[in-house]
Image (cartoon, rainbow, N blue to C red):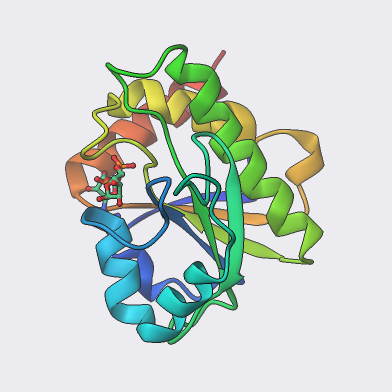
Length: 173
Ligand code: AR6
């Protein structure tokens, strides 16, 4: 998994083509990493999100992804995806895998060479870090994404430690 790196820090500082946002279906901002991205990206990101046509108030269903320009971020694009709510949504593992898959697919379609992910669903949405890390690595390590430099931004040292341990355990399988 030489194209994958783990970084402890704030994803809004990532110098990559696309930053992935752990959004909600309305895609108009929120708390956590979503709030941080919108704060740094500014008004232009909110306006770009509003351009995405909602269907019954939903701009991005759970497990899907949408791409917009990135406003004031260093990145060119924000890829907004919605992870599952761990104890509420059925088959959260499939939905989380879809969130990664659809984000990576959009990055490739838009000629991105690098992409940064937060730990989707691991905050308010309650997904256990270790289970989420396993799903993330499982999807991101696929051959078809080899051309992408993929970084995971973990917010705290303890989150980074969990992801690193999961990554090492998968490498020794
Ligand atoms: N950089 C990197 N990671 C961060 C940052 C940051 N600046 N800030 C928080 N995290 P969450 P979710 C980590 O709750 O669980 C929003 O309100 C955080 O520590 O942001 O997918 C949306 O609008 C955690 O590990 O996303 C939705 O309503 C991870 O990012 C809802 O929260 C994800 O936590 C989505 O919930």
